[in-house]
Amino acid sequence: MKSLIVANWKMNPQSSAEAKRLFNSAKRGIKKIRNVEVVICPPFTYLSSVQYQVSSIKLGGQNCFWKEAGPFTGEVSPKQLLNLGCKYAILGHSERRRYFGETDEIINRKIKAAISVKLNPIFCIGETKEEREKGQTQSILKSQIEKGLPKISKKEIKKITIAYEPVWAIGTGKPCNVEEAQKMGLLIRKMIVKKYSRGIAENLRIIYGGSVNSKNATDYVREANFQGLLVGGASLNPREFIKILRSVSRVKS
Image (cartoon, rainbow, N blue to C red; front, side, top):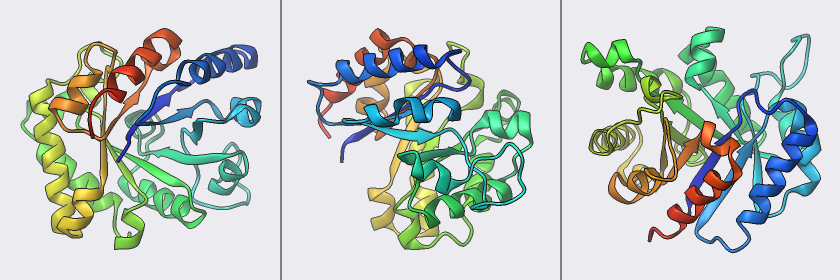
């Protein structure tokens, strides 16, 4: 199984020209890189700008709505993402939960909608600093999985990648300790065993996100046994992003 490296550009950059430059820099940089599947998730406004430059890189959306069409001002449907060349969609990101009030139930509807048009969901879960300090990490992850995946069949769960993103580590420059992250990855996999089966859990891709950089990327894949990374700020620096890809590509799967 190839490692999955997802670049989440969030609300960056500020021009289409800069988006093209970033995308092309990444595309040039991965020509000789093997053993990684690269997904770039630019803002919706730039998807059409980079759509026809896609080759070894796959496109993803940073979010989507749960309806295919209709009177939903400001939303983007899974089918619209698909028609723009997207293969993936990030769903349940902590910033969506925090700033836009997305609940586990809403995220579940989005996951089902994405799967229905053959988009692959990247389902984000993770605890806040306060929840961690109260010793609630395990219960929070369990709740997010239970409430985020109801009515997701054994066939459908195989299309999903789970991203463990401790909220307190995102954008802080203080990544989760590798040993602690590994424990959370194992915990998530055990939850999937209980909910589905051991076979499904063993083949499910679980990735890590939260202050990932070229110095710690390999540790999360090799030492903590994650099957990839969700990269935020570092993905906006082409040199740093390519370093991450190269370091992960050297890890034997």
